[in-house]
Length: 109
Image 1 (cartoon, one colour):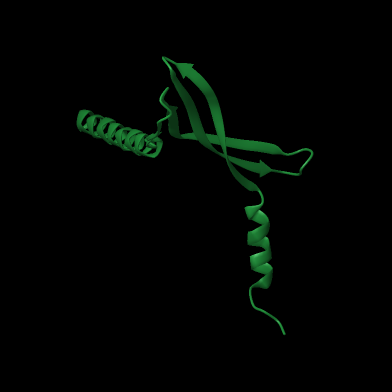
Image 2 (cartoon, rainbow, N blue to C red):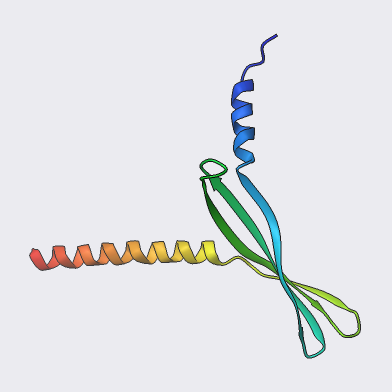
């Protein structure tokens, strides 16, 4: 019995192994009786062969863990503003280019 798309699924599953996800921590750091730990989500993409390949690494902060002297634990989430900033920069750049083109057209006419 032959299953359609079995070869495609094998290839897609092989690509999943190239991307590794994990968490990394910095700390704990003691400040004013509190213990602070910074946690980041990391993604590693392996390019090329195992021995002679390259790595693409991206780390994004996810949250900060704070432990009081009394033993209370707080988790403060960090919002990812990078994608919004990139979109804003792209829109401003497009607006600038369109504005410069309009001024050039107006000056030459």
